[in-house]
Image 1 (cartoon, rainbow, N blue to C red):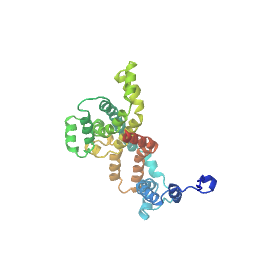
Image 2 (tube, rainbow, N blue to C red; image 1 turned 180 degrees about the vertical axis):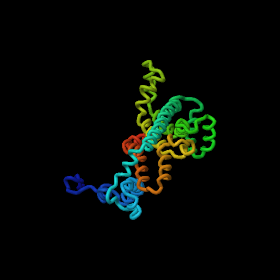
Image 3 (cartoon, rainbow, N blue to C red; image 1 turned 120 degrees about the vertical axis):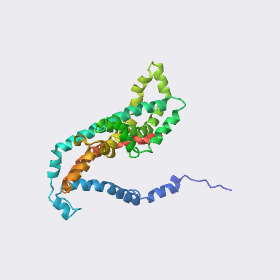
Image 4 (tube, one colour; image 1 turned 90 degrees about the vertical axis):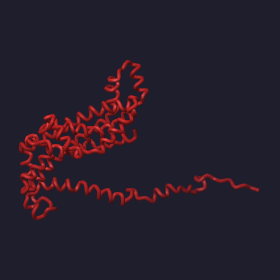
Length: 298
C-alpha cells in the first residue's frame, strides 16, 4: 500500500486557510464608520459652542440679532480690538496668572513630597493615608464653601489672592497624589539602593533621580491644576470684593452683566479669556495623556 505524501502549500499551489486574515480583509481600511460617526458627533458637540463664541466675537450685534447662527458678513475686528486694548482685561489676566501659577506650584511641590513618602517609605499608616487622600476627591470645594469662607475671614484672607490659592492647593492635592504615587512606586528599589551605596542621601535621590523619572506625572499634575485653577469661579465669587483683584472667570460674568446689550463684545471677551486654557491643553495634550496612562499602568 502506498501512502500519499502531503506536499507543501507553496508547491501544490494551494493557499492555507486563515480565518483571521479573512476577517481582517473584510473590514474597511478606515475602520468602523459607526465609530467615526459618533466620534465626530461628540467632537462637534464639544467644539461647536467654542467655535460659536469665537466666531460670534467677529460679528456685530445687528448680525447676531438677524441671524444668531450666521457667518460674519462682513468680519468685524473692533470687538476683539476693544477688549484687547482695555486695562480691565489685562488686569484680570494678570490676576488669573498669579492665582493659577501659585496654585500649580503649591500643588506640585506638596504633592511630590507627600507622594514620595507614601510611595517609598514603609510604615503602618501608609495605605490609610493614600486612601484618605483618595477619599478627598469625593468632596468638591463647593461643599465646604461656607465653613471655608468663615475660616478665611478669621485668618483675614478675604479679598486676597492668597485666600484663593491656599484652598485650591488643599483641594487639588488629592488628585495630584493619586496620579504621582504610581509614578514614584514604579521607580526600582535597586536604583535607590545603588544611589545609597554611592553616598547619595534621601534628599539627593529625590532631586537627582525621582524628579527626572517622574516628570510625565509632574507635567500632568501641573497642567491639570493650572487649567482647573484658571477656570475656577465659585471661590473667587465668594472671596473677592475688589474689582481690581477679579480673575478672568469672575471678570467675564461681571463684564456680561455690565455689557448685557453688547452681545458681540461679550463673546469677544469670553473668547480671549478661554485662549490660555485652550492653548495649554492643545500644546501639552500628549503629556497629559502620557501621564495619565503611566499612572494607570503604575
